[in-house]
Each structure stands twice: as structure tokens, then as C-alpha cells.
Image (cartoon, rainbow, N blue to C red):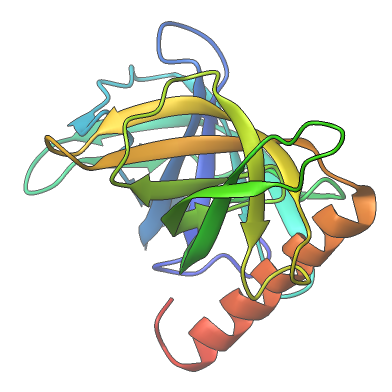
Length: 213
């Protein structure tokens, strides 16, 4: 496991079953050759991942992204939800890095899709919670719907007035007025995606040097 460290953020993909999907986690410890990671959550509740469940684990270093296949050996909820993963047979370096989501703060502006003659009109200012090459999670005091489409700009990540087509793919209500939204980029140029990915790696590297991650 190349450069996998305690407290390193990872993404776990459950490959089959009712909880199939991708979830954020973090390396908690190494027990012999096994890997102890923080539990997986959906809508604020820990997932009862079954023993023997096959999963893929993704993580990045400052230079590249990696993937390995493993299985869940043990699950505990005390004192906190944790999963014990078997040591992988091998680790694969991968080229596709847009999957990896990084917790990062920033500002995302939402704009109404313009007509052919109109300029995009700003409709909201959101707080960024995490970002990947494929989308962004934002916090916003505005009730929007899954499937809503608009344009976004990523302040301090892409050049000013770089508009990206996007849509809401997930919605979580925080309280009566505050919502978290999963926003997917729907028309992102390859060079823009690469700029975002490089920004993620730079942000991650600086955070590690500061001892934040």
C-alpha cells in the first residue's frame, strides 16, 4: 500500500448489494497487515456493512491516485463505527482521478442558465464543503430540487467568469433553512477538470505540510 497513512482520507466503493455506492472514510490504524478505517455513513447514520463485503478503496498521494480491492473482515460501533479491511493483494496506480473528493472550503456562485442573448444571472452564493474533478458539495440557505440545472463558478480554483454547467444530484436538509447539495459538473472541458484536480493535489499537499490532514 503505497504511502497509505493513518488519518489519510480515502474513498470506499461498495461493489454490490443494497448499500452499493461510494463513501468517504479515513484510515484509523493498521492492525498487523489489516487496515482499520472509519465507518461509512448515509444520511448521518452508519451503514451496517456485512462481513465479507467486497469493496474498492481509492486514495491519492501528492503525485498520483491509487486503487485496491479488499473485503470487510470486522465491523464495530463502539466507541465509534469502524471497519477492519483485509490487506490487499496488490495496489494499482490509476489515471482517472476525478472520483476523489477533498474536504475544502471556498465559495461557489450559482447562475441561472442564460438564453442565447442573455448573460448568466447570479442566483445564489454557496459555501463549498468538498470538491472533486466531477462535482462539488455545497451548503446553501435555499431550497432547490434534485435535477435543477444551472451554471457555477469556482472562486480561486478556475479563472474568473469560467462558467460550468451543473445539476443537483443529491439533496440533504440540515435544518429548516439550510441544505447541503451534491452538484455534478455536466459539461466540463478536460483542461478545466485537470485544473481542478491539480488544485486538489496542491491543497492536499499544503494541508499535510501544515499538519491539517
